[in-house]
Image (cartoon, rainbow, N blue to C red; front, side, top):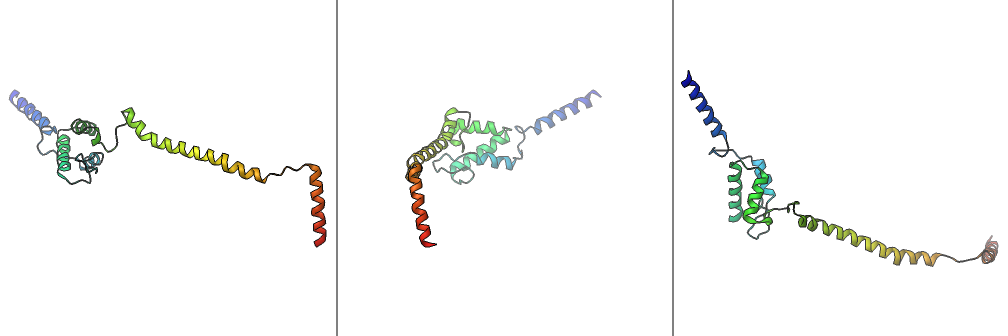
Length: 160
């Protein structure tokens, strides 16, 4: 009885160890996850292409590394960390937001465009719109207005 229990425990232990990704030789890679990781990385040989679209030797080597790390059971964040430790931060297609400089580098162009648009609007408002309205205003007092009305009435009577 004890012998059967010992054999069952050993078989269960081997099954658990064999099912672990680090020990499995034929671990199936989740292709959807692989494609997602691949699309978030850049090829680092200087071509400037996403890893997903690049076909050179460096890109192929990077894909092998990703598959190996996925086979070892690493999650995407660990794989990104591993790739950054080898190739540097420029391997990421979008710089990580955890670094404050990266946030500033992404936000500054948009703020500059908004500020430039505001400056253009204020300049147009002061230089163009005010000058148009200044030329159209009439400074006429009531005495002059009565005189103009008489002239207009006389002209109307001539034609009717």
